[in-house]
Amino acid sequence: MRAQKLIVGVLVVAAIGVALAAQGRGGRGSGAGGPTTTYILKPARVFDGDALHEGWVVVVQGQRIQGAGPAASVTPPANAEAIDLPGTTLLPGLIEAHSHVLLHPYNETTWNDQVEHELLGTRIARATVSLKATLDAGFTTIRDLGTEGAGYADVGLKQAINQGIIPGPRMIVVTRAIVATGAYGPKGFPAEWDVPQGGEEASGVEGLTRVIRDQASKGADWIKLYGDYRVGPTGGAVPTFTLDEMKAAVEVAHSIGRSVAVHTSTTEGLRRAIVAGVDTIEHGDGGTPELFKMMVDAHIALCPTLAATDATSQYAGWNKAGGAPEPQSVQRKRQMFKMALDAGVTIASGSDVGVFTHGDNAREIELMVAYGMPPLDALKSATSVDARVLKMDNQVGRVAQGLLADLVAVDGDPTKDISSLHKVRLVMKGGTIEIRH
Image 1: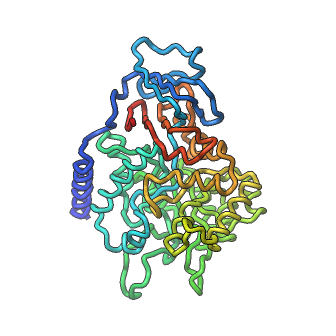
Image 2: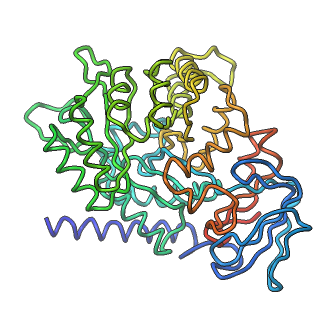
């Protein structure tokens, strides 16, 4: 076991070195200045996480925001470096609440192929590049919801970012994700074979307790459970953990300060997760008006992952660009999202990126608008709301004095054209300029 861990460690270091060499850089941000520089940012407007303000400026000193407000009312320090950003909107660094950096698009390689055949070192090297692409797209914080067969590599990547070894967003990690015994994949092997799974298997209250505590000890910031999966008698999705198991898992996780995210696509799986008192629901495809009302009453947020369904439907042959009618999977997703909006559910922007290309995370925010959410609310979802749901609102998610200077400037006004989020001009993380165009 010690030898195996040593080999994994060597692979991690080698993969990171290769990825950095390919990027032609080492260490933190490529822009001017550093975490001790003082800036005054001068965009056309500022979205502060709540509202849009014309003519505001933002002063950054060291790693934090020193002040923000109308240009005439803000006096920057004498040594401040002015950065003019005409025509842009400055926003809090965007937040991705459902990512898989150790996966890459399924139209490149299937999930099974990635889990079964790709070397850990290869997956870590690719993830290193994906993290840089995510940061360059203006997403300065991500919650990564499972390594999908890559063990605790997310913990190592998080440490590498925090230590300045590689560039990337702030990471919240769940490590291996927890699945009911026999419920996950890869499948299709002889019963005599013991095949490594994409998640960590557990059964019963005792088994879940052990696994949750073990994952937390190894670096899990949140706990993720698969509340249902495609293991029904005819291959359909059915609940996998009993209500008692789910309740126990939530109690154990909360008792050690870990919030709980639950994957669920069935009505009964969603009901059990709500009754158990989880913190976020991922996907929520089996939602009903009654269940969404229960989520509101229980203060449970929904990560709708609209972009994943949009992507997989196109992989399956939907010619969206050609104007083909929406397939049933997309229609159901649109209907689910409208029900959640109508019920007043807290929507956390989370896309399931990894199913599609890292760096294209804003695709989720665009789809939320296309499916009926006002642009201003979609921007809140990806900034201040996500920060609150992830319990990071005392650090990120708003442009406000004392918070970390995680900021992104985009051309245009995303409250009028949400696609402006793809036109990134500047990304700052913790007062360091990561990219500047």
